[in-house]
Image (tube, rainbow, N blue to C red; front, side):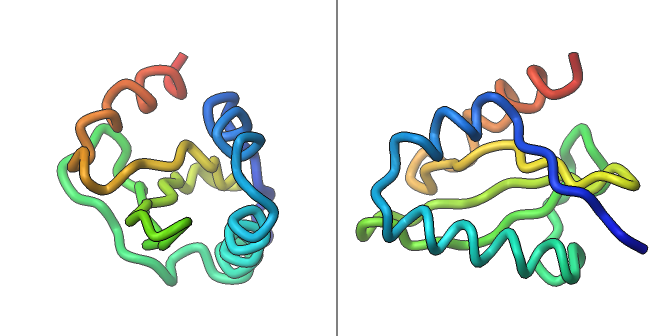
Length: 98
């Protein structure tokens, strides 16, 4: 099945603030997601049943790229700082649902 990639407004804001190296890393990961969206770890107990995360190390900070698979689209939701322990995820998910 062919999936199309859609970015949320929050992700676009976060992406625009990153340096070139980090943007390239994220772009490469998104290409891998497009090839096989089920390759990364699935998150459990969230509002979406098909919510996944990609581990990233951007500028020596543990970061997670969160995305949801809602056929035929893959929605790139946000970049989460790992030290906050996914506490902001609920905020980002509520914006996507609207």
